[in-house]
Image 1: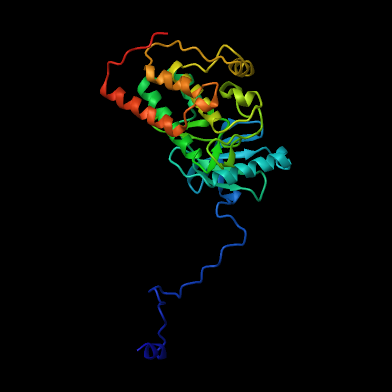
Image 2: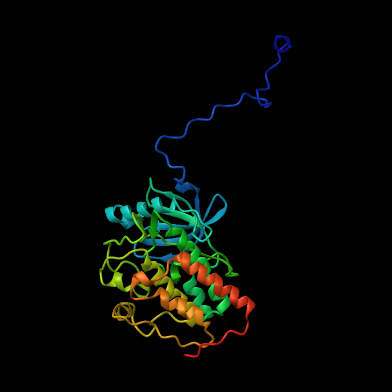
Length: 320
């Protein structure tokens, strides 16, 4: 039948029923990362700056019709070897991360200048600005926020390939939307990926890495440290959510870190504390990093506190 039709001028419809024979799919380009983005696809016509740093700026832009956050390295630093090294380190780290409480990496521009890193755009802004506007949070909101942060950090700290954030602070915790019902941890520019041989390993890494106000004492003192530095920073954030003010707000950042490194801690002032929440904060900022709980342990404690909060509305108030 096919030969008969062809003899009268008929043509094949192809094996899959189309009017044309299927075209072969070209193989992927060699050494071409599937996350490499062509800068011409980025739309900056209605962009605006949402953050600035010493190496560049973060802008809201468009990519294939979707709002995105673009971290763009300053052109003057595009040839700086250390800046390029740090940029590629952050890209290689973000490619590996997939979690509901971690900002989602979408792609990067690494083959042209300026170098750019593209992540999902979160409409709610950062926790720093939110706390600045709202002040102290009610216990229920503080617990839900703390749970989101702890979930993201527990994922990062999962062994054997542990990622130490090293700059966990309110500016690096983002709200998914204006309803403030979901948080994600972001900005991994200072993060460190390490392979853990055993759970008690400590590392000699760069001292004074991160932001002074949220910095663990061992980092400030240039001593060996492990992933528990993030637990300390988490405690400082939890304190800020409960108090409404940054820890050691009466000190300049460097002086605050120095004061904390000497064994001091922020003072609780607000009333209405759930005692268990204050106790957890104090455990997390223990001067001895070995006494700080892991984020998996923190999650269990927070879930228990949340459960008690919903079943018992007559908890005792802590009066400072």
